[in-house]
Amino acid sequence: MSGFEFSQEPLDPAQLAAGLADVAAGGYASFEGWVRNENEGREVRRLDYQAFEELAIKEGGRIVAEAIRRFGVRGARCVHRLGELELGELAVWVGVSSGHRAEAFAACRYIIDEVKHRVPIWKKEHYLDGDSGWVNCERCAEAAGAHHGHPHHHAEPVPVYDYSRQVALKEVGPAGQRRLAAASVVVVGAGGLGCPVLSYLAGAGVGTLHVVDGDVVEASNLHRQPLYSLADAGRGKAESAAERLRALNPGITIEPHALRLTASNAAGLVSLGDVIVDCSDNFTTKFLVNDAAVLAGKPAVLASVYQYEGQLQVARPDAGGSCLRCLWPEATRDGLVGNCAESGVLGPVPAVLGSLQAMEVLKLLLGLPGQLHDEVVVIDLLSLDQYRLRAPRAAGCAGGRCNRITGLSTQASAAGLEIETTLDAAEADGYCIVDLREPDEVSRMPIAAENRAWPLARLLDEGPASLDPARRYLLVCSHGVRSLAAASHLRAAGIPRVFSLAGGLVRQPRREDTRA
Amino acid sequence: MPRVRLKYYALLREQSGCSEESIESGAVDAAGLYEELAARHGFSLAREQLKVAINAEFADWSRPLADGDEVVFIPPVAGG
Image (cartoon, rainbow over all chains, first blue to last red; front, side, top):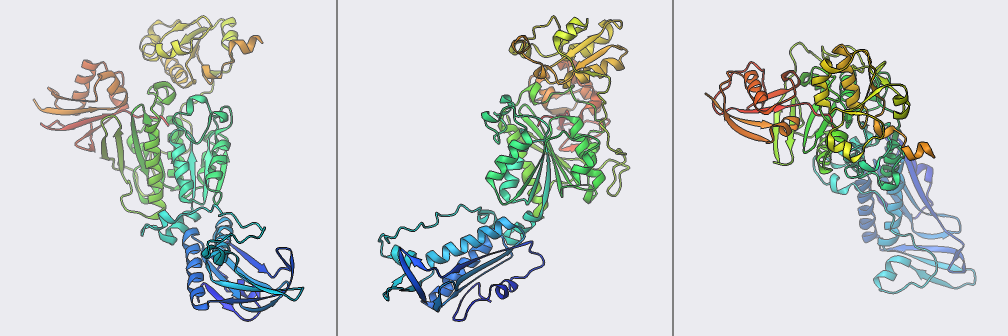
């Protein structure tokens, strides 16, 4: 059956729609063009349609095939009447069946616009006053290079999402595009890694993206997180990212989850995706993503960056592969080695690693060759050295199980270690405030309270011997990650009254604010 | 003594002040090599917190060193 046909007989939309019936299609959209009673102020009584049939059928067929290819829809067809039609009669019908509604609407619109524009069909209008005239508004007028001089509004070229550049890859094609449209991916963290991951997966037409991030946009994020603008500062990242991604590609579903991944919600969130992408900035979350994915038997694409370097790994519990715990058996290192907030990072570093994560997700979803498996990629973006290191599965793991994962837990519990307070209140309460930031951080954002400057490495080294077990200490850093790790370490070393300022200095009210 | 080529990442790069160097080591295995380097460069990370890869493959710390080995020390990183 050709995608484009003419009919001398009246059209039956129900019968035409039935011709596109397809149990794999989740949606169907159609357009019907009817004979109207007016054109350019003249009352119309009936119409005659004529066409250069041989050429019109070829061109119409091309348009329908283009629509199927461009939008990845399952079926499409257009039928145009010829001959005499009365007012209100169905003159042209377009139908599209598709996995998703947005593509169905877009393809339908594309076909009718292109048919009106490119297919040689003329209509003779018979006016109420007895006069008649041939009209071929778009094609003939354009061919003649003339203004067609009537006031009705032509559809602007519709901005429709176009996957043609990736569908053109023979490994992708319409079938690959449909696989992407049917896929769901959970992205944990919408920061430096998450921004490119989300942008490229949305761009590729992954049908559903879950964005998990409990943070708000900060001005200091913007240099490496191009989904956000300065005006977003203070807004939730999940919602801001969802808004940008929907604008980028309205044809897919974006589900924002404005929360932090925890031991209690991880399994539920991981169950939403076919692939999980770890774009978080701390070990606790990375291990939680890894463990939840392994327990669910789903692939997890993990990456981390540090200053000018990055690491990339794909955990494949679904294919008997190694996971993050084969590489790093212990999870409690937060605060002891740096993250972006503390160590600094150049924007393109997470951009490169995030783009590699997006690429690995697409390789997985499309079944492309070269997928990372039992390997870790280590990249130094200063020297441009790249190592692809074999990381085989730890002995003792078998099948889809990792014998280091028994259940989901955040290993370093903050309970009893963190306190929510202000520096003023802590000072008044008799805490000795210890600032364990590096000197350059302190000079950028000095704190007003009386404090002892004791950078992390030195504190961990000297603290056990020199802190007074009878005193209460409040450890502070910029985000509360290092201070929590240090408090945990010092407690274990026998200093009982060491606490960490929850949320760090960035969460403290400014002095001016508290006085106002 | 075997001559080995070393690559440092993350904190180790910062603390050693270089991203790679070539040295002759008196150590017999990767663990001994790290202890030797930790003493020289003042590395603060314990060996248990690191991975070592020799000639593009993760290796046990007890792996003997051979002349011409390329040894990469990799600390875990968490930034995102």
